[in-house]
Amino acid sequence: MNTVVTPGTRRSIGDILVSAGRLSGTDASLIMEHQRQHQIQFGDAALALKLLTKDDIDFALARQFDYTYLAQQDTSLSPDLVAAYKPFSAIGENLRAVRSQLMLRWFNTDALHKVLAVVSPGKGDGRSFIAANLAIVFAQQGQRTLLVDADLRAAPGAGQHALFKLGKSAGLSGILAGRTSLEAAALPVPNLPGLTVLPTGAVPPNPQELLGRPEFGQLLGSAAQQFDVIIIDTPAGGDFSDAEIIAARAGAALLLARKNKSLLPNVALLARRLQEGGVTLVGSVLNDG
Ligand SMILES: Nc1ncnc2c1ncn2[C@@H]1O[C@H](COP(=O)(O)OP(=O)(O)OP(=O)(O)O)[C@@H](O)[C@H]1O
Ligand SMILES: [Mg+2]
Image (cartoon, rainbow, N blue to C red; front, side):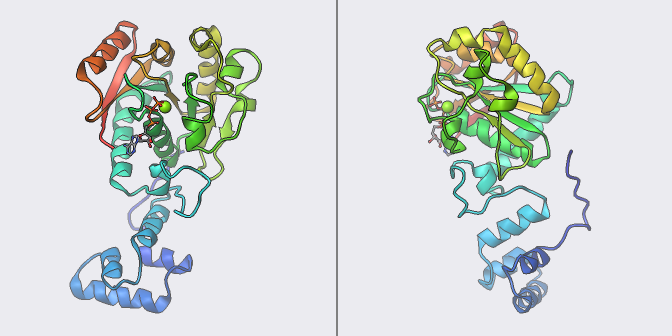
């Protein structure tokens, strides 16, 4: 369900902060007076008077737009999940722009278009970072979102495990081996409503063989009945063919390159291999973080 915010029905930033106990009524009046005198926005007036911090304003904006948002002091997740901790940062804005493009080009055109693999040629390009933060912005939009960690090559505890601070648990490898189910292995993220993570599970000796099994297709089919958006994290595309197998199952991929790191020929080669495998490339992102 999408949250529709109608202008005029939004609570003011001042109201939100007063009712959250972050601002006194007297200070709110001082800010409004300053705002009126200088014809500036409430947030700018508050910052000028040093009565609120940038954190307070982000908090209020998040509430105003109905964003699920985590306070900086909440350490339940990795600070790398910037879409959750700093939704109004530049990277938050960029992620929402990518989300809009993906909605236009893939997710809303066909009921079968629900799965997207995040791929890139090299190690450390930021696939896990982008997949996780993208999944968060989709969940913030009210989409039931499943983030699948299909990097069965990652070191134990790395990838989505580290970002969502997950313990040892069953996951994708167990489902593909027929030992567990999506219902048993998928983990709803407590502080981010709408977001569920399927971890890798125990790292298997034969990732490629597991990913090639029909069980993977069946899993995505049943996930598509329960979720609106399914984002898959993958291993480096240049090293193994896992990413191609995963993207072929997903049907679509978002191709990532890392600024000053990814070599263009490697990106182009991966793009060609994916297209030859029938994968729709729905977009590309230059990760300049
Ligand atoms: N846009 C960004 N802004 C800030 N930091 C970033 C950004 N993208 C990636 N990083 C950081 O770069 C590092 C590598 O990112 P990440 O683990 O997501 O890459 P990966 O492609 O999944 O790597 P691997 O090959 O190990 O799976 C991490 O420390 C991550 O926090
Ligand atoms: Mg990764």
